Image (tube, rainbow, N blue to C red; front, side):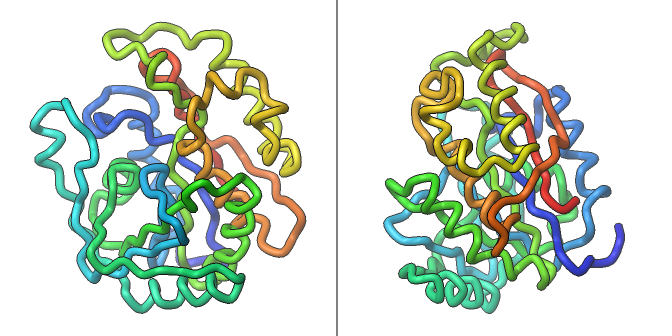
Length: 267
């Protein structure tokens, strides 16, 4: 791996099913190769679809636990542990950045890493030697709220921190075909293509209003939790600039309609 650059990239990763570490799918292979293409970070800050809080909250444990926040899967999945260090001092730094932007930031010393964080990270960084922290989404927060939150995190990129937003480009569990590998339905492909076009053009206005502008948005995302991390990534990528253009670094579907599209800014 190369040395830490002046500015670290920002990533949005679609993490798909909790079984990703065991699934023989293109997205798993992509993530297993991704670490070698990234500059080595001093720490990772992950914004996962699986943690929302009333105020932005940061994990502050020196040894975050592995949270198995899912039900009904094979025992082998519950046996997985991703034992990485945390960074309480960095958690304090992140909280101060957020508070400087007018938010009430909270530190959580007892919360571990949910599968939105450890699921992809154990494939990208299997050595588990890079400190990992999580930042929550804002419960009931809008797209603009999360872009604004991401902008406050932008200075971390110059400090060697890799910001990873983990969610899903298309995420409708009611439409998942767990037993097969059927082609994605038209509505999923249409939303996925629209999302790519706006990210690559840097159209923050359209992305922020995706619920009204994107085709089949309510079907692609019956709830907004798995797309909301994207908006934190957008803000972190743009910083003080009005917008930033992203690049598709992986595109595939699993279980029929789950888009595993992943994007990078500054890579």
